Image (cartoon, rainbow, N blue to C red):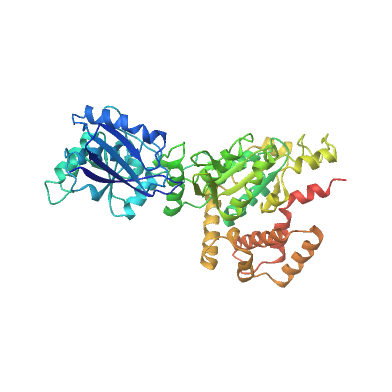
Length: 517
């Protein structure tokens, strides 16, 4: 036989589209050509494949070899096609049996010795292969990731010879699974998957009751939160403990987060499957680092924090242009990165936490009056956060300096622990999901009338605040969302005036600006 067909998968974002590797041997001068929009790493595979086949004691055919990676208009990159190309050449030259190739998909980079090396993006490939009802063959080093989902059918190998021997052995039996353990090892899910094991606890933070209360509300309804306060008040310490009070991840959320890390340059640690991610990029990061990008678009920090927490410390030190890129992802929960050749879409449904000083010296609003900044300097400093972005941050909370007495008293051993607060969060989210099948922070403007249930007195107070504070329509709706979450924490059916009052107290930025002459 001079034609062989092998199945593999490409990687576009967190998608894994099917790639059919067609290998044809014909008469003519010996050469090997790869077509189908291969990039440099794929073109170089012919040298790796040739050495791997020869060093595995097979014959590299001295014929004209044409390899087509279909569909032709889909970009292919990386060394993931080495294994399917090698198997296609061996099957087309009659050195291995091709009877069972249609039941498998193959992915893996080959060393010159024939050993299989790891590739990125194995988890999305595993999920897509499972939907196609085929068995996936991966390198041994990717076995934990490929077998992360128990329902997937994956096997692993360490060497090209193992795969060839297994295919030859299977072709002699009626049941391909009968002797699978002789050559290929079934991928098993890791026994220890980390979920809610944390080194720190929210009770470690001294005082700052308002900050902890705001974090509880933010976690319960998925409301974005900004901490304002002088240096050294515990803003970063509070933010780092936000994951400890979030509800546990569902399997679907964990799959989405794991798929993003699988295709990123960080790689994925299977033991962290159920862990909500916490990302805290430095304020010098560029727009592609935050949003994602590159010639082959890779996920940025907002996607790496999907279903987790993105913390932007020293928010006003970030470039305004970089920050404004957050507007659409905060609304849509996804980001689309477009390039001339193609585009990739990544999910970006994160909880935004940010922290900043109220002025360049950090002491504006300090009762002791230590601020040295002029009103113009303060306006320019706070003006680095654009109005549209600030509109998307539901709560702006002051984290004040601690008194000498609070500092000297040390940790309060009777303070609420993260576990206790997390139980409140889970109960509150359960009420929201039963009522509207989504969290309050995700409600659209049209849905608020149906689910908010505002009392007459609360509506009157809200209208008065709307006139005095000159709020935008987006801010008006976000006040209602936060108030609905506060009411849910109290298991109140209706939003009452005190819920609106508490919500209005979490708009500290307007208060700071109103104090300026």
